[in-house]
Each structure stands twice: as structure tokens, then as C-alpha cells.
Length: 122
Image (cartoon, rainbow, N blue to C red; front, side):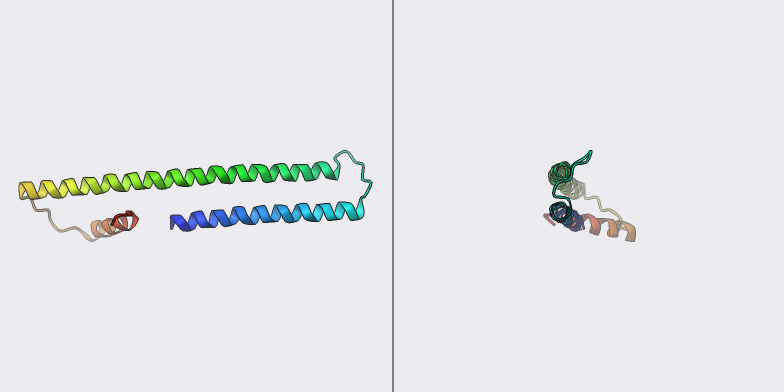
């Protein structure tokens, strides 16, 4: 599910980038066609430069998102490794002490299955 969120976010960024390219192209075309000698408070060229600046900020935002996604994945892997070690330690203690736990409840079984599905080594 997390990968699909990352892919969806990537597609959103790609779409936004594509939309900005199209807007810039259309503006350039409209300006050249309709306002060859435009002189206003804010020139069309200034507007186009602002669009380029927005695109640049968007790219920066996407780069930051990618870094956060990588950190999130690394954190998830560390948590899973810690949970695996803890489960192994519990099993070893049970074996050493000849302690048997009561069977898991349905809720505990579901939680264990969900946890296993998020662990890369399971």
C-alpha cells in the first residue's frame, strides 16, 4: 500500500509538471500571437519566469518528498528488524524455560499476519 501511495504521489508530481509545461507553452503562444508588444505592469515574460520559478520549487518539493520516502522505508525496515529480533528472543526464552503460551486470539492472529506482511524478511 505504501508503494502505491509513493507511485500515486510521483504521478501527481509528473502530472503537475506536465501541466506547468503546457501552461507555459500556451502562454508563450498566446503572448506571441495576441500581444507582440505588450507593456503592462507585469509583463508576460515576467509571468513566464514566475511559472519557471514555480516549476523549480515543485521539483525541490518532489526531491524532498523522495528523501522522506526513503527515510520512511529505512525506518520501517529497522522497526521490522527489531520486531523480528524481539520475536526470536521471546521464542528462545520460551524454549529455555519450557514455557508455553496460550493460543493466540483471533485478534492477535490478525495482528501477527499484518505485521508479517510488512516485514521484508518474512
